[in-house]
Length: 163
Image 1: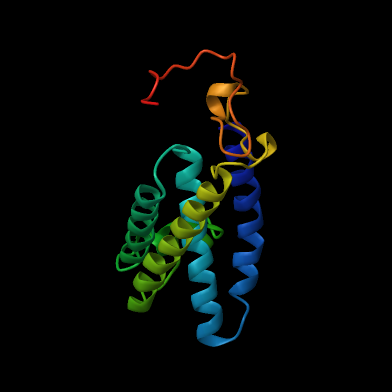
Image 2: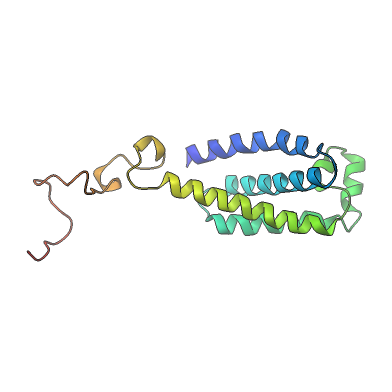
């Protein structure tokens, strides 16, 4: 889990300047790119809090948070907070845009799909131990396959099959 958390911290730190930079792109491209990256950051922050949670669960929570932040903009709360803490505008936004709700959901879904794919690749059989940072270093953690048959002298935990 430590390796996953460290990777998530690196991704979160990278997403902040990239997301802020994306907002500088012209027009709707910048708005959508920034919104997608904001949703991805929410996903990564959720994964930092619950690193063992399923990607689908994290995606739903991140999407709900993104939609919640967008809906909060219908109130005067984000503007009032930004008057006191100007940097809060980057976190809470300032103006409700209905399209941003869809962007939050799509961004969280893309982040969840990416995380699920990375996890599947990391957990794929036959990969070296370095790819499995959380795997125990034992034969039980790496079952034999056709390329690496079990030692004939080793006791099997399974009953003998029919001959």
